[in-house]
Image (cartoon, rainbow, N blue to C red; front, top):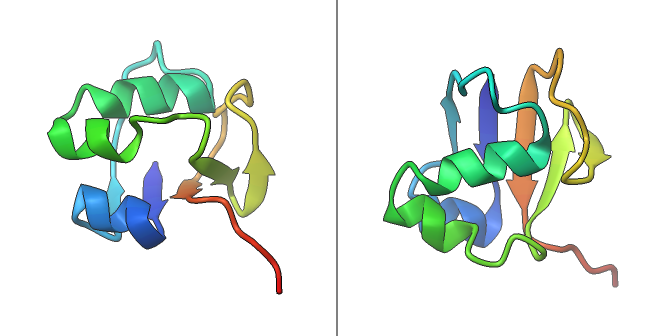
Length: 83
């Protein structure tokens, strides 16, 4: 699965994207975030306030309880504002 990071999420993690193979126990976006937080302090820092970071699965906004089954890409980004 490809993970893509935007804005300050990317800055905190230190990379724009990566390919990962999460364990089978990772079934939802929330599970993925929890697993990522165990991968190092940069991930723990990026996801320290899980309620702020937004996600999209294959370019469609997703909630923490959204299943990852069949996902090719998951993107993480801070909230967006219009103007």
